[in-house]
Image 1 (cartoon, rainbow, N blue to C red):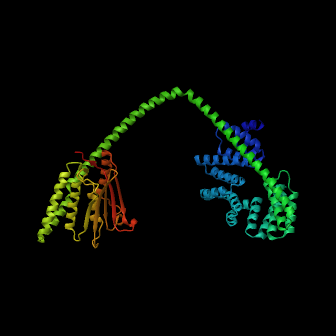
Image 2 (image 1 turned 180 degrees about the vertical axis):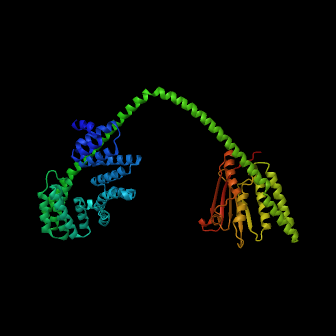
Image 3 (image 1 turned 135 degrees about the vertical axis):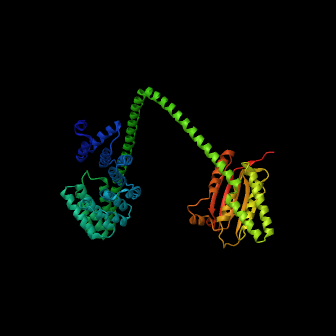
Length: 551
């Protein structure tokens, strides 16, 4: 109650700091937990709460708080508190002995730090390096600790002590001893018995590594001298393990067995403490759940008081929204209808005009044949051209035509192009036995644009054995048309004319979508370069909208 009364007069952020630095961790947890039941804690409050849980050995709760702080900092774009939350989480992960999870977390978040966050990144390196150390990746641990450059950190006993541990494992015993000796003096100045116990124990491990067993025993006995009831169990376990190693290496197996039993007893105590911590974590989660339920009840009460007002506002808003939706749908309907009509006009122009350019070229070719006295070729060309023109004009009257008529038009078009070409190409139109060409109706001029692309852009002048194959099949109520050529490939044309697009192809794609929706059949278009199959050329796959003629 004293802390709560003082909180009212002094301010939340100051009281958190004062309680924390006065080592009143339980009181701070109590104050912030009660506040958390009523309102959302700030990032700073979450930080002190998480740190206090860590000082009390409640690392699981500290981990939960660090995750909340990370989430809150991300939501508020608070980069400074995000860095502090990341360090808090790394600290709890190493205390919980979640080594691999901790390493993955540090590796993932290290890229978040900016140049101006160098201090926070160096703080993370303290935990990151020791996580590698615990995972027996000593060279990586050394690399991470070498990233710590700030003078304020280099003078810390924690840095010196941890750095010495890493140096032992990398074989640098001389420098490791210097770092231990330096940190030992600082711990003695601070009268920190736990730190002294820990350093002496680790100095013993150094001499065990070197095989200097007498010195190792001296430092182990010194470690025992400074041990108290407040010494953390992990430090006690560390010392007992060193005794076990000492007696095993000096072949004193009975003594080694005694210390092994002691290690097991300490491990049981650590396990029981961990179990109690998990129980406390569950209880804390239950408290949070009750707090959330309380907040929900308060919110429901406020909602109930304003229900009538909200209801009337909602009715007015709904009426306005419905009116706006009606106007929007009406506007979209008119736009879609207009677009539909535009596509119909474009497709009629496309299939009825045959483009002035194409007709002019055809007449020019015919004129050349007459001047060159190529009567037979000219007669054949004129016959094909007239059939193509007549078929196109007839088909332009309807949206759908019989598949056999559409294929006849395609054949006439290819023949005309072949007669006019300097280097002829072969072609084939293959129809699967399951396709009834006299029953299936398809949109007109749907195949021709892709055949035209193959002829106009698919081949180079010096290409030999030019070939275009058209295959029609019908399976699972899908009418498939595959157009394949052995030319340069679509990727070559994309590179050469990246900014140019075939108007006919664009219109065809729009028509496919329109007819597919209108006749409720599937449509599809896929253009691939044959190089992905180890071949040369382009392959176009079309699933055509269709109707089956019923007699």
